[in-house]
Length: 126
Image 1 (cartoon, rainbow, N blue to C red):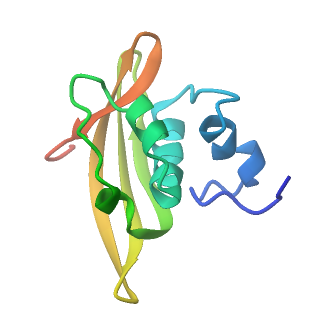
Image 2: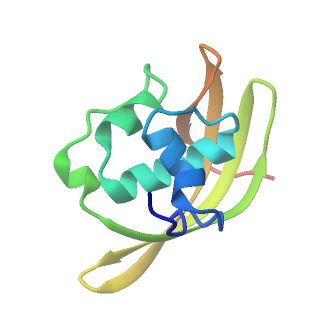
Image 3: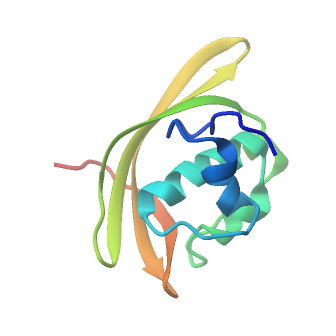
């Protein structure tokens, strides 16, 4: 197996980080780990994993064009882990027409059937 660094920016090898989740060998036990694995899933175009980790009441239909961006790096700015809901603020960079852009989001995650799932972006976080 590859010893390349995980694209999520954790500094861990891919095999010991997000690949555990994307391959189905484990499920993230924190909202931040889930958010990092979702970044990797977007980078790989892994729609099944994204659907599995999105709250089922809110999960949109994912078109192939939704997964075409070339995601290049991730920075977790801060995260607050709660018992039933958690918040992760991050910045993700992607290439569009060979120009690097970034998006900033504050994401809400909730426990659903004992697993963390992505719910929605939040407008702000104190």
